[in-house]
Length: 258
Image (cartoon, rainbow, N blue to C red):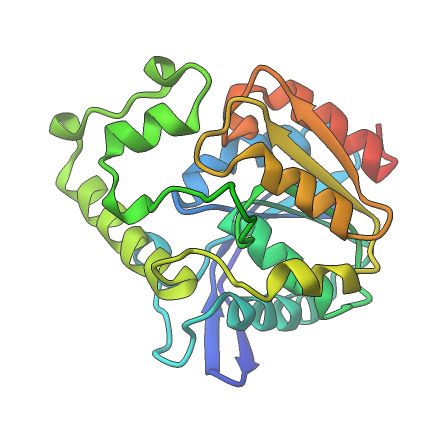
């Protein structure tokens, strides 16, 4: 689909997106690895029947433009709220993984009536006492892989075999990630503020996630009124890659479209 231009407090923002299928909208917000980490799962949703899966690219990722004034997760939530209006989405299910989950939580706090369900998959953004997330910006690709997957060898990326284009994309994604999330990749006010979310919420966590400890999932689920927590034993930080069938079943059942 063609990029959508929306007006926000940061000025005009261009949002590029890819979509699969037709029917009720499922908006999937990717994490720091970029849209490649969720595209296959989006395709699964789009082919599951009566579902339109849409993956927007956070401005600044994959070489897309990012206005200088767009530099926070809350700013991204404003962008996606305006974007949902521009696309005239109705009764959307928003699914966010990692920083995409943080963005999704901020979007839910904006109470956009176009969103009817929220799914947080190993979401970032919280500070949970005694259970810190590691400093992702000090880790190598191998270290990130070992902490992200239950079976890291299956998903290992060999940096020596990456093309120049891939290296550029990874470097650009890293810059954008740091810009939005800051060095701490968390907001000390978020844990208290998510108590204001009034959208039905499902929290999904990979049991083997070492990037964001399980206690963060428990904090999301216990703080958001009525939220439910599902633990996927066969996955780490990216259940959409390690256990896509399990995640798809959980999402579709929660969305009432199973």
